[in-house]
Length: 106
Image 1 (spheres, rainbow, N blue to C red):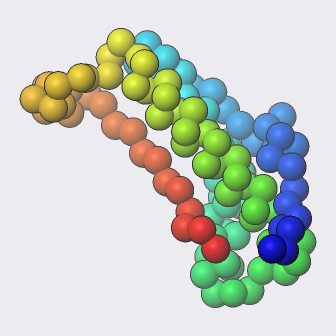
Image 2 (image 1 turned 180 degrees about the vertical axis):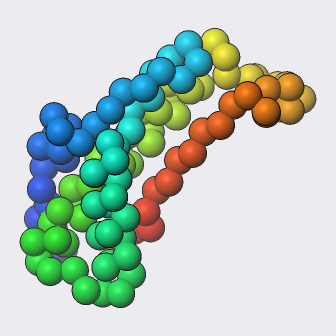
Image 3 (image 1 turned 135 degrees about the horizontal axis):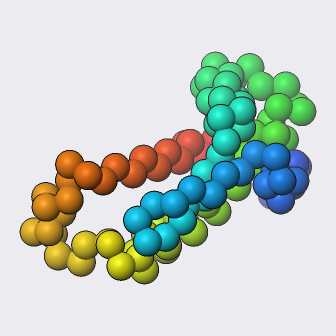
């Protein structure tokens, strides 16, 4: 097994993360510059055009994205507004939106 180097996901938090209210809870998300960088690296990854430095950056951003997806899912599941019955999903559909994107494993 070959060890993959990456930038430390924790190094992205001070300048790349926002916390926003969502119902009775809060969600972690990337700020606009970090989200744009993620999308740029994703496109370059699809084209197999990442430099070694970008590959390390991409690995760190993907790791942080996966961590936040898990944390946000846990927060949403525990929030009081989270419906527990499938029938109640349509009741709040017009007033609630949540987007989660996880880049494919490369």
